[in-house]
Length: 311
Image (cartoon, rainbow, N blue to C red; front, side, top):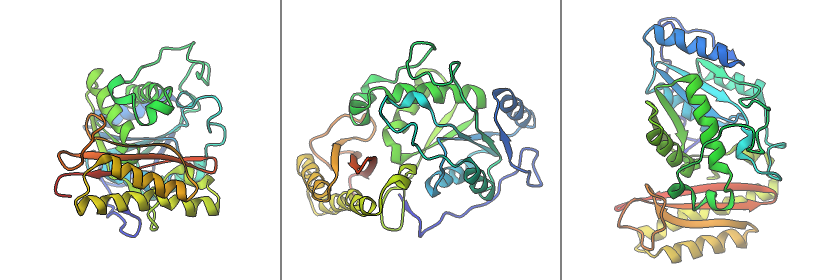
């Protein structure tokens, strides 16, 4: 994990043409995006890709930093994908700030923004009836977010596959705050034979410990303060583990008590194998993940903590 008080070192990779830094491209159409990346690859450059839904924060920008460590140029997509939202979820109120996002990415020296108006023929596609869509690997989606949001990962896989086909990156970087999503995309790349390296970048926290999320902007002052119970309980669980607590049921119970005491409404708390996402009963035998989703006010937040033998 990373905290904002320890900012990452940032360097500048070569631009699309190498040598002098190039002005960041902002592209809206599939055709222009394809042409841009074809020219980059014609010049022998590798392409890193960071897919986002915009309203960027430091966590997203750290993904850009990570991509720059693995590729010559970096493309960032900004697209609020309708197919990963169910009716009644927060698609319409999801925060958007494309002008602010462009300024942040320019300052971080990204090479290209791909910001299409839609990636679906009917512009919405939430009905799921009018267009080809993908189904995520079931063994990775039957738990955690996939249990309460069964539509979610199919929508994620569909839009990421579309973006991969358009951008054709060599490397794609996903944040581990959305840990299950990262594992699902890794599996999709393997199952569909994409020639793309998928990298998981460390979760980034605000100085007070709250995991950075675009949805944090929708928290009231009091709810944001209360939501600190999520990260505080995860760090307390890590401390408890370091002192010898290995029972998953005890870890889950302590986290639940802390979050509910501070007014949170639980979606789930699970202790799972970090690779398979299957539940485990004991911590300390292998690399595991404590995953949490909870509502504070109208905002659903997720967070996690990785634990390994010898942590």
